[in-house]
Length: 366
Ligand SMILES: *Cc1c(COP(=O)(O)O)cnc(C)c1O
Image 1 (cartoon, helix red, strand yellow):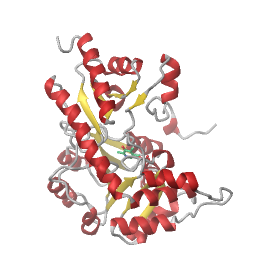
Image 2 (cartoon, helix red, strand yellow; image 1 turned 135 degrees about the vertical axis):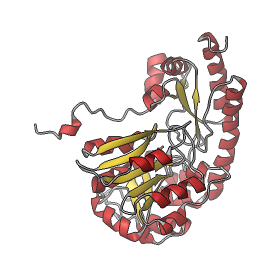
Image 3 (cartoon, protein in one colour; image 1 turned 30 degrees about the vertical axis):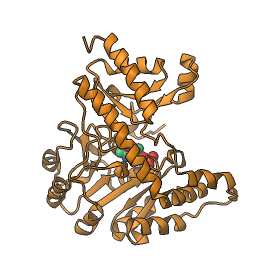
Image 4 (cartoon, rainbow, N blue to C red; image 1 turned 90 degrees about the horizontal axis):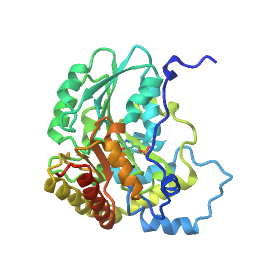
């Protein structure tokens, strides 16, 4: 058949291994997945209560405009309803942006390592991908500026960055945006915004007023604990949203997903509690890295990326045998590093005890 040439040799996204598969393979009763940055505490109890009693008519199409959720998010964020675009996860929004702006002959600039969907989608559309190496886990914004030329359509900025966890301070972000040509769309992916505690991070919403070529991406998959429901959204000027909206599939969220997202949004106390618990959990990992002199990147997310000083695929395997799923840096663009989602206090302590044993056996602490 006449496949797009770009699909030659292309592979589907490799997610973290599912829990059931690891249980079967290793004969384990309990497996803890700290591989995909889901909220270890789950979602707001208000969502759980709603799901137990909901009586939705599943035969009907959802509201393609997501009116109720739109009103709730517009109020929460403080924007007009016309400034929002909803997606089947922010993955969907990334695909929509790519489809709207990238094609053979244009290029797109992003950090490396960063979120793989940026280049994956760009390659499907046949655009040139310009990956700019991070410096100690941080975007090299100066080098990214140099990479932008007449043919650049989209620049991806992931803050905090997945997989490194590093957030871009307000000053550096503003200095960068001031220099990006106004006809280049800057996507600021804020999938972990709820976890940010960095003192130099400021509210990014004013940026879309000052720089109408900026679009913010947010998601209900991480801190809100609703990854299975697939809801993400974009915030931008109405003109930007209006251009992207025709590219969106007509019913790209479900009735249930719209309902639970609105309920979860309403429970900001839960998000605060999760952020506080995450800070404590992060400290468990930071203390471990400091104690053992392992290089780690300062994280403003619910995961931490650090140097195992060993073959990270081996560490991944060894942890899996012991019932923990993490991500090896080999799969994420930084061999030797591992990315661990910050779990509950008990999960973190258990994982770190195993890791201490494994790294000792690997001769790292000898
Ligand atoms: C998890 C993640 C996403 C995708 O989230 P969904 O809303 O579940 O599609 C997007 N960007 C980054 C950086 C992520 O880590």
